[in-house]
Image 1 (cartoon, protein in one colour):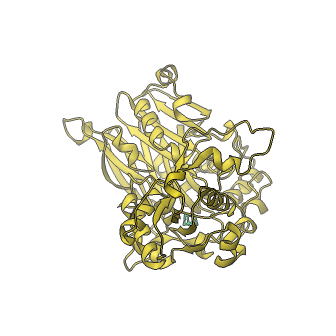
Image 2 (image 1 turned 90 degrees about the vertical axis):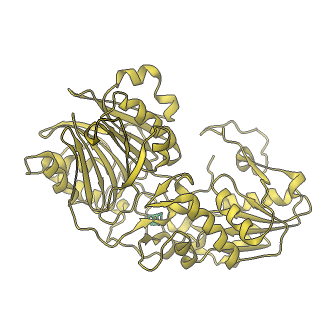
Image 3 (image 1 turned 60 degrees about the vertical axis):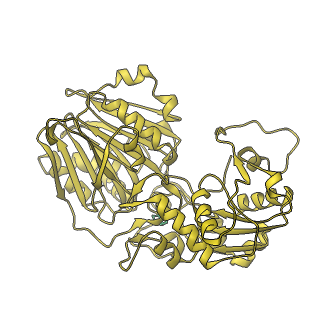
Length: 477
Ligand code: SF4
């Protein structure tokens, strides 16, 4: 069902020095499932060689005991994928693994390279043959073709040629490299499992979000810094900067929607940010009403914030079915709003006769919001006021979030009043950009990317569809 949400991009995880590294990577990926549900993969090393298993589908379905036994190792990296560039075939599933002149390496990428097709065109013109349509493969080619002799130098050389968003975990027979782009678009957290006997005996772990650490008993230490490469090997853990950090561009939408509220990213609790977004929304856009109702699940924490600031009761007036797969059988007779009804069902006893404030975290095309507002009205609500815990989404993302083209973004083409009219709400209000930044903990120095709300981008880029015919076509500015 096409639920009208921006799509998560990817999640990555890495484990170094643990007898069950592959299983820990599997558990971490399971916690990061919300970041990508199309495919998943784990590459591991048993100290002699690398093995990889990738498949389409969900983590728990792909990695059976038998599969995990086959990829047993003391070092592992893993990846959940929702395709943001390249098609969604198994071919593009990660980790990518190659045997090149620098040895065997496996690589997993969260983000999107804005100059990938430019690099690819140049490499292809020089004779390189690509196996996938994913932007990530250019990184592997750049590492293999680097004139630097050692792998760390070759990786740094390759990274300096990239532009855009990349949080990477790279694995060799005995090492893990964890890397973040100089603007720090996507999060990458570093943690440790204490094994006793000193730091060199500890297990080092990396993940897109800290919720992946909790399940494996790892302590969060810090983020990999923008422009930093952390290397974990037999000699211990070291850090170096492959590029000077640039003006920070942490994706604010991670706090608004993508990351789990139980995670810490960019050094801050997502739950704290999300509740503050709701409180700020209540301050900016109050309305006389009886109930605050979240659009579950992502609107829940902001709705708690709105309710506590406004003093209005919080109620679960919409219940979400968590077991909706990618395919479903529609009834032959058309049922109105069938798609939304698969996922959400109203609690009539709570909503009937009430003035309801609905809290959601975004409106993309407006089609789903319209159906949800109608659903709440049909359940007997007297008034429906929609409040959105971020500003209007007016521009596509080029840094790893799957957004429709501008013509499909309702806020790029209609005023707030026109959107209100289209979705049929009694009132509609979005959070201000300043309110969003403040709620996400930004004091004076701007550290967040807010390009999808402003249309102003921190990098120079060329829309990928104008360069490579196999690239996605949804990316016009
Ligand atoms: Fe995040 Fe929006 Fe920036 Fe993309 S454009 S990185 S979704 S804030």
